[in-house]
Image 1 (cartoon, rainbow, N blue to C red):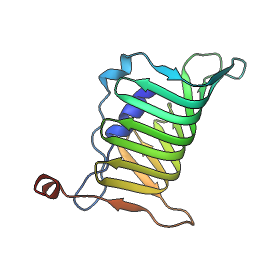
Image 2 (image 1 turned 120 degrees about the vertical axis):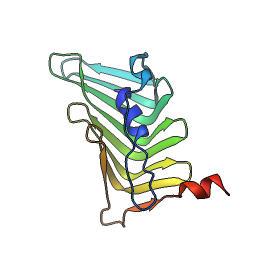
Image 3 (image 1 turned 60 degrees about the horizontal axis):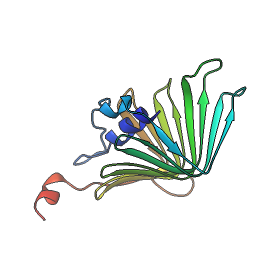
Length: 165
């Protein structure tokens, strides 16, 4: 579950004239334990769901996910995570990389992470924003979409400007 988020945050969009994804490498943190804290946990075993609510914080290694509510769905009859849905004030932090949105859905089998609702990814001064950001983690590509509310926006600072202020 958190391994995906390591890949998400490793896919920061940096380039001189276009937005590009950096090669994603599995994090050494993927084998570390995952600690989830919340005000409440409801386990719905028959439905294969675990619902964490109230100031949810999920940590693994150097990655932290903050949200109001997180639902973990497992595959029927298995303990393997099928998808993870985070709602309300979603913020994913790894070092100097931050992704924010109103909602995030990770589908493990498809290798996709979809951020919706004022979705943004930041690293330092660089930012990519849109109504929906879809990261195709296995393909090392992304799509940023705008809706009726506006246009896609990217602010990218060339390397030489950051090195020589």
